[in-house]
Length: 291
Image (cartoon, rainbow, N blue to C red; front, side):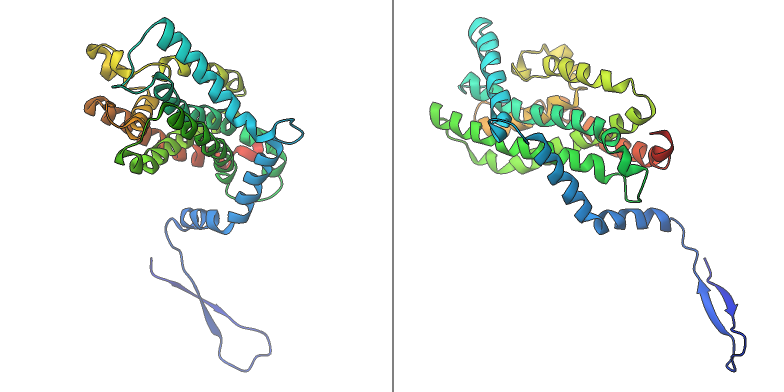
């Protein structure tokens, strides 16, 4: 748009009236919003550190809780599915490693989903008093879950030493699968965080989704046992592709990926991430009024 000159003068001034230029740039507000995310990076760090500190404050064993929960879940699934049901593993991999390779992304996803959905409600006083990009709040909640995710790698390293299972070159691709898990967690979390502000019923829906998702996702078993005719329908669960990617990277030899189902699952993750950000931005201006 062509700049519009605005003339201004001061009473008693002897010089010629000066000209100031008012530039109307399309989508300037949107561009400034994304720049504000960087400007408010210190607030993001403060919120993330506060959530981490509060989680383990006044606990007896502290950070060890991030290890106990996935470890006990792994033991239960290994006994039920591996010993009693005698379901096959991927290749020659020990069943405990098969389960824990899936527990890593699932624990991250489920914890991030729960924390993210409640993040705006728990920070309602902050939202109604000062301006900052509201996207910082759920993002800080996801980062808090990511810290627990990193701590859980201690168990994975211990299991590999115990079973003498050596990783292959595929382990180098693990950061890629971590990024995919982060995108899926963030996208789903933004959807639930924005909807939870408008409809408080979602605080009761989220625990059900997490519990239901644990059993319909291939956490305690290999996705290869799903009949071929149901593979595409099963791949609509975004965590299927994420879990398969983690197992492919961690287990190495013997772990396979269904290309068609995997592509569909990755498409769902990308769709969740894009639409999650869009939904959050559309409702963001109403948060302070509704909350």
